[in-house]
Amino acid sequence: MTEDYDGIVRALKERLPMERLDALGVACRFILRLRCISASLFVWSLVLSRFGPGSPGFTQARHWFRRLSGQTIFPRAFQMRFKCPAAVRLMQAAFEQAVQSWRQGNRGPTHPLRRYFSDIVIWDATPVAVADSLRPFFKGLRTAASQIKVYLGVSAFGLVPLTARLAQGNVNDTHQPPPLHLFREGSLILFDLGFLTYRLLREIQQRRMFYICRMRRCGLATIVGIRSAPRDICKALAQSPAGIALRSVLPANERIDR
Image 1 (spheres, rainbow, N blue to C red):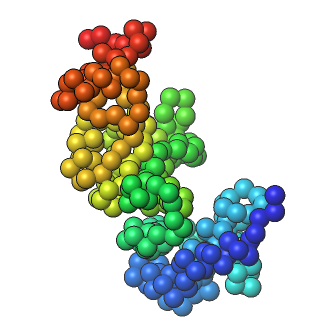
Image 2 (tube, rainbow, N blue to C red):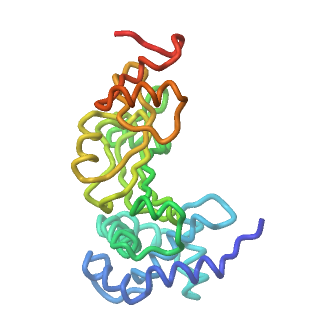
Image 3 (cartoon, one colour):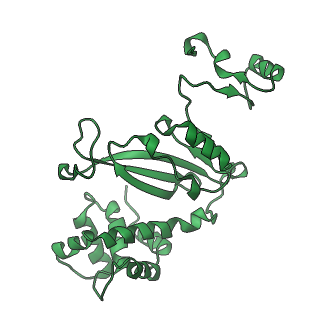
């Protein structure tokens, strides 16, 4: 498969224009004086390094910098720009700038489910192995010496990232719930059992959002409404409008009595 690099570059520059990135570079103190590595070229090169033919990293980013700017820079001089805290602040600000319009409701293509939900947000985590020397800062899980967990919230309406978070690899997912304050009222939140807590479910309801998650086998759920179900379940709910216990209608081999 041949990547449309020209299309990727064009879309990136439209989402993150040079003027905005350079202004962010000054605000984040990434740019303190005139340099050949501007904030815009730095961000573009780093993002585009993920689309290079080789492994992502300093070399790929430097190749993209040369392609975008027409200038050649020594490897060490380029890599040193990654060591300053201002580079982290710049990338964080660039991410916020890129997703701001989507959070505010300026949606792109239409979606059939938009008639029911203002947005559908998928929240999940991915462990990423890093150098063992980083163990004092990013401890790993099980046999991994050092890991980073990348938490990402993505809108299913266009597969656009909304928010991201980094944590140590051994952090329990229940301590990293989705940041609901960033999502629109009426959103449907999708997550797996690793994030499930009753506190999270209560907050989702309080913020007038919805959720889909597998229920724990030991859970005590109550059926209060039905879209489609067998006739006997519909009849049982009609006789008990306040709700019926889910485990009372489950097959015996799927029921966990407490």
